[in-house]
Image (cartoon, rainbow, N blue to C red; front, side):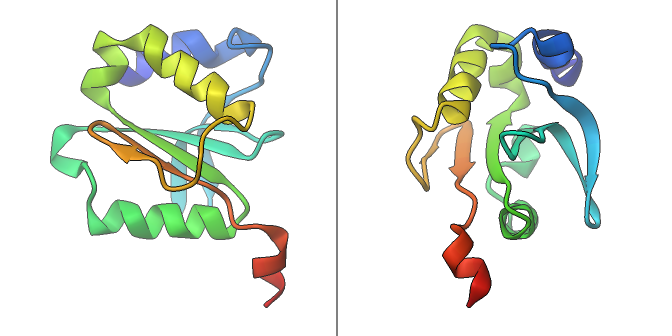
Length: 118
């Protein structure tokens, strides 16, 4: 349900004119939503998945592919959809700092190009 509600906000360039895709393959994973041009992945997680080692590994892989990852709990996506959309727009505008982690939200910034060369 949370994915369908958020997809309704993201599809057809409804969120700030940004083009998102759903269930985009990225290596061995599937991103719930992705804006390819901005290299942003948006993930929704149930409460049982919040801050797990598996998700940290996924985030690190996606980060290594040049994608920033914004992760919300499904409950927040349902209850506070407008805030979720505002946070996504802030990430797209480069207004979030690396390593933001609060209850129900995690943001991991993509690696700078220089780190990928090392």
